[in-house]
Image 1 (spheres, helix red, strand yellow):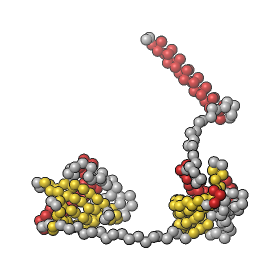
Image 2 (spheres, one colour):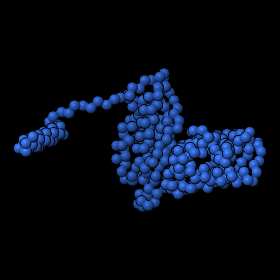
Image 3 (cartoon, rainbow, N blue to C red):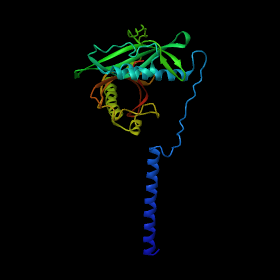
Image 4 (cartoon, rainbow, N blue to C red):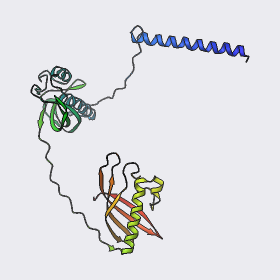
Amino acid sequence: MSQLAKRKFAIFGFWLLLIYTAVSTTAVWLIQFGIVPSSPRTVAAVKQEAQGEGGGLGDVLSETAFVDQFVREYFTWNQGNETIRASRLKPYLHSTVDSQAGIDMKNATYNSFPRSVGIWKIEDGEDGVRKVYVTVDTVLTHAKNESDQRRAIRYLAVTVKRSGESFLVVDKPYLMASPASAKIELPETKSEQGEAVSDAERVQIENFLKSFWKVYTTGTVDEIGYYEKEKNVISKGLAGLVGTPDVKNVVIIKKQGKLEVKCDVSFSDLPSGAQLSYQYSLSVVKEGDRFYVTNMKQGVR
């Protein structure tokens, strides 16, 4: 291609791009101002099928989402902004429930903001009414001193009823005491029966543990695999999550040719610097002058 032809081709391409840009920009502005209608975007909807009188899984999911959002609005307030709060709550409330849903903020000295909402129980009532029990973690900030903050965890009951494709709150929410913990009996952990190891064996195993835990907290999957008798008996490790481990309270017994090792291991949590303390049980075998882990369990149960 000659230089003249190349130049004509470049000029043609430049004007083509310029015209395309102008047309595209004009079309966007026409759509923005409503002169040219845009085609509607199709949004997929999840079909909710009722399963019996109490409703199906879809009902529960939509109900929990509704209550979660309502409770967030319910526990969000700023002193003097009662009108704004009432407008936020209005879409959630039945006409028989007052606009503030039972909260009078005239004498409130702290503003409120919810950090998290957890739904832990739903009870069926009469005529399709259901009671939803909620845990709410809120931050309270003094209206005249933002540095004065406190945390409040509340337990709340919200009464709702289906209304078309959504729900409505049909009664004032009310606070309740925290759920009482039930008393449970745990069986005593059995002490392992077996032979004691010699002092020399103990030293060898403790040295192995130091090496193993160091690699477990810093090494790759392949490096950790060096300590496995078979693949995938050890989890992926904690590299990047915790700092150097400290191993304490090592108990070793020999049982049916295997070494059963229990120990407490403490790590430093890298993001926070907090100290984490865990209990581990390891099954270890010795082949030649090397030790291998054949099983690994965290916790006492």
